[in-house]
Length: 94
Image: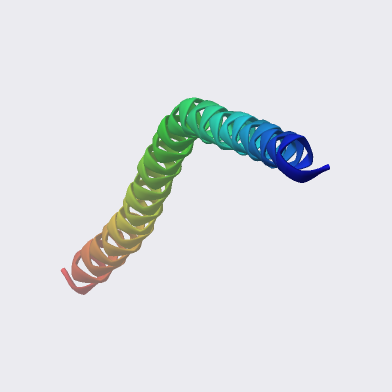
């Protein structure tokens, strides 16, 4: 089994090495493909989330503005009542 056995053994090791390299290459290609697909799906998700955050911030600002508006109306109404009351007192003194 001298030289022929050695040649077969070298050939088998070479073949197994080649198969392992192909399997590792396929595995790496699949990982890269999965990563690329995640990036594709992640970008629209990021855009959607950023838009959602922007919409919520606008709604929050609008609510704050409306609240300030309601407080303004309340203050204006209170001032109007004070003015009316003062006018009544002035009329009573005359």
